[in-house]
Amino acid sequence: MTCLRLISVVAAVCLAAGCSSGGSTTPDGTATPLPLDPVFELSGSALSTGEALVGADPVALRGWELLGDDGALLRLHLMAGTAECFGAEVDVEESESEVRVDVRVGTLESMASADCVAVAGASHVDVELASPIDDRDVIDVNAGS
Image (cartoon, rainbow, N blue to C red):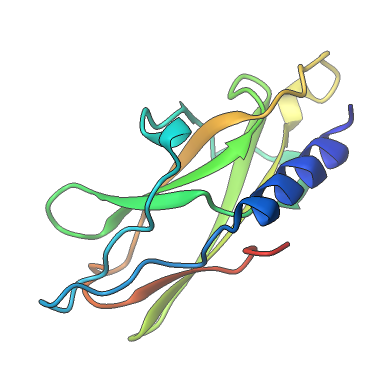
């Protein structure tokens, strides 16, 4: 199964499961994390974000959570292949009202000639924001793709 086909299957499963694009806001005005499917409660494998990717495709989030006390570190949960073979590119656009997240997953360039197993599993990517999330919505630009 090719990486593109794997990503397409994962996206279709996510669509069928009714993935949401963001959390809600608590009474004190802070963003609440998007609830996670039970499979993601153990946070899965950490994907590399520093290496060039081959065949990167958009991937919808399965959830997100805040890490640390300052409210500026997000853990984005998604489905991807093994962390040994696959990595992620994350683009974040911040405004006063929202944080738009675009995650793409592809084969690590260093593994392009390897025989990588194309089995999706729970994965995550950590993203440092320029400022705390506060009452901003987290928007997955790939929700529904």
